[in-house]
Image 1 (tube, one colour):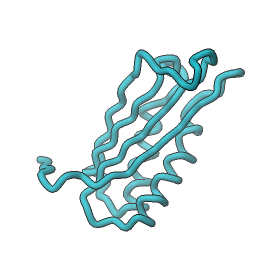
Image 2: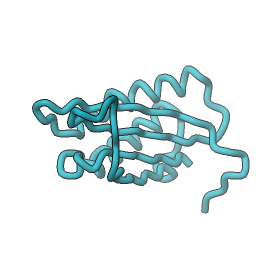
Image 3: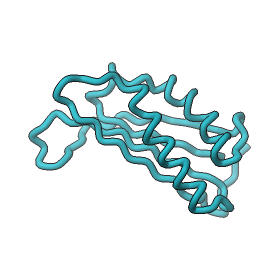
Length: 116
């Protein structure tokens, strides 16, 4: 715990510093949600096909999902979500004409979650 998944548009392959983002995100999760740094696990997944709106623009997306053990308040989860939204653009190179859509979600892990 925390289990972090980052989905990103294939068009960001060369423009998204995924490792740098994860290394910046982990201390943020520790500070905001009281997790242990060594427990933070991030995986990134390139989404080959993304369509935004009517599909005519060359927009891109990054979605960050964070699963935490139950017990954090809604306020803590909201604070973490907002911090993630602010962090993502620091690790994506801006490209003229491309709109970057960023979303984040913090959820409680199921009670069956186990890690070793």
